Length: 623
Image 1 (tube, rainbow, N blue to C red):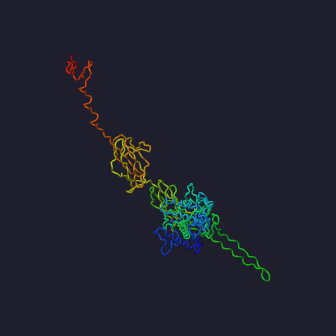
Image 2 (cartoon, rainbow, N blue to C red):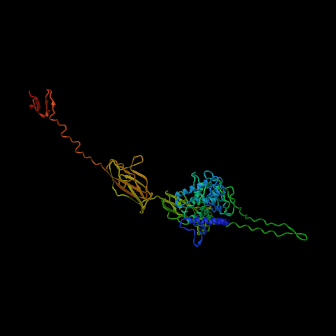
Image 3 (cartoon, rainbow, N blue to C red):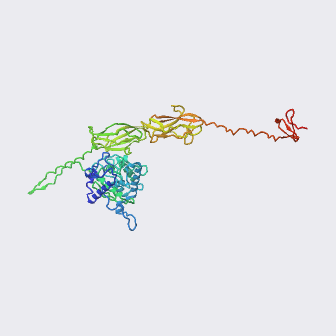
């Protein structure tokens, strides 16, 4: 739709030259896998703008600003008097308001972490923000990034614009009959419902907040894993935002301009754009709202009018014939969406997958008339409800346009870690018809085999600790089984589940003995290393049982040996023969003053040195 508006504008030779140079320069700067030229010598800008993966646009193909970058440098020279960057016409036109610029850069940084393959440059967000709202109406935002007044696109009632019936009950656009594009990045409410993000961390997703809107725009552009560093990825992403070649060219012009350099200007001092793709003027001095949409032509037939009578020569009057009644203006042709009566499942309605794996089949729906004929060019929204599964690109919602047969095939759906059953709902965007429900079941990750990664025997002395930790690898159908739940128990008997009350044990965080571990999980490679094992004072052979979800079981044998008995040292504990024996030269004192031997000696010395023995064997002194 917007392509028709764009053809009315930007006819000047200077603007056309700027756009062409920007497209050529940007195409040359992209990765070499895609060139700017298509077969037949056409540039990428001349190629068809549609893309089967897109859902039409983020903005409902609302009008946009067509002003092109100035020819002067994007970074004005400092003034000679102050050395500062001017904020007049040149500075405000080429600069970006501080809060708005910060929002673009923060969004790009966030995408580097969450979707690194997208290679989102902040300058692309700035280019789209410039084209959609003139950088939030010249940066007229509060400190937290919320626009000071709403920025609303025209009523999308089918009169000069797309026909999109209300989807938000007026919550975002204050219109409970038709939708309108909202905020600095001009999201229509039905797109914001799934693409909205909280970019400033306040717990809300507000399309009127530049931080929220910039982050949402980045995720929207990256949702199909398109790479902004390639010409094809960049083109598809921009055209998915607003499906118009003129729009694509305008965004590229600003992208290339901002890549050459830009500067920060105070909030509220940005230049306001002056031309719109629908032929209307810019917003003047106020950022919102857009000019009201034109009043639809009347379809009623006015009464026939009779001109006043005129005099005839010679007297009398004549009455001219009445003006023939105006033919009623034919109503605007109905859109394909208006002809949809119901949705039919075009494939399986029940899907299964293991946690973290892709579902084997894609969900598809067919839009049909009351007579059962397929309706093409109808947008179908697929929404995940009650689960953490996501479509390609990491989103829980995908909007796809039906093909010529009326069939829309959702992007590949990948299960999250949450097990159980959830629903995927298919609805028609812009029309109320009964929704289709698809049931999806996620089974827990499983393993069918376990094996130790080492063949080393596991032994330990009673009262000690095992030198090696037990490590096992889980597999499923021969492939590594990552993130599989497991338990480890020191069982009392083979094949049993009851924990032993003696033998080896683990330690919990407080150092207490535990013989059963739960909530274990293998790593991405299927490996699981158990904590260190210790042994109590009971020697013997013990069993460690490791089991996983899916029924894989491994029993590991642990051996605890008794302490080695200590052998006494021969040199220790044996009496020395030389110790404790009286010295023959030493005797005991006799009361008479002589010296006598002990009773066991059986002899005594006389004072004169002679020795005699008494009949009893005791020693006595002679006379």
